[in-house]
Structures are given as C-alpha cells and as structure tokens.
Image (cartoon, rainbow, N blue to C red; front, top):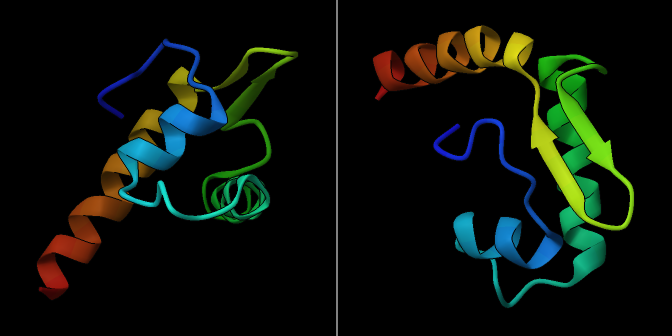
Length: 72
C-alpha cells in the first residue's frame, strides 16, 4: 500500500515482503492469493514491468489490515 500507483517488479515485491530468499514463482503464487482476497481487479499487471495495486483495492486492503490488527 505504501507504493500505491507505482509499478513493482517481482524483486521489489519480494524485498518489500521480506521474502527475498524465495523464488520468483513464490511471488507469483502470492499475487494469486492476494487477488483472491482483494478481488480480481485489485492487482494490475503491467506487462514486462511488474504489478501495481489498483485504487479500488486500497479500501479493501485497509479494512483487512485493520481486522488483522484488531486480532493481535
């Protein structure tokens, strides 16, 4: 969410998530999971560059993060 509107590569995504030792395929699997949670239009694929979070997904993501924080 801190990179809203920015295109991020697999490497950038893995570093941001603290998963830089994981494979690129793991990054792809994580994106599939995020799309299931946030909705199919939540993550925009930018061919040959990476992905970015859509503006519509921001509200959903913030709601989910708040729910998780309440459980902690």
